[in-house]
Every structure is written in structure tokens, then in C-alpha cells.
Length: 92
Image (tube, rainbow, N blue to C red; front, side, top):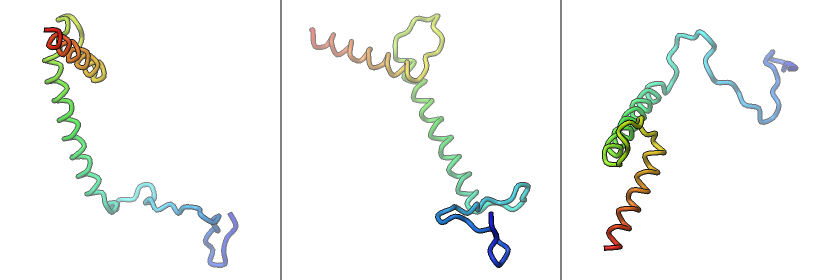
């Protein structure tokens, strides 16, 4: 890159400036407390979702020798089970 008169390299118009701290920098990044708080909230959210899936797995009929259902398989089986129960109710 060509240099300006002040010694700084010229950037193309619209080029982004790298604002990340240099590698090995011991200074805490601004906003890192916000990032940690967001990570904690995300962990709690995922624990809540996983707990709900575990509860749903308990109510969906499966064979005892089957391994634990994945989330998508649990949802698909729950949809099919609800549809079956609806048909039973409607057929009398």
C-alpha cells in the first residue's frame, strides 16, 4: 500500500479499519462484559430449550430400545402423534 505524507498507509475508499486489539494484548476489550452477559443468557436459553425437548421426549411414544431422539426427530414424531390423536378424536 502506498503511504500518505504522515506515514500511514493509504486505504481504498470504503475500506474498513481493523479495530481489533493487536494479538497478545492484555487489555480487556470494550463490551466484553456485555458479550459475557449475552453468552450467559444464551446458555440459559439453550438449557431451557433442551429441558423442554427432554420433557417432550417423555410424552412421545417410542420403542424402549431406541436411542435418544434428536430434536428434529422429536418434533416430527410429536407432530405425527398429535395428528394421530386428532384423527382418533374426530373419528369417534
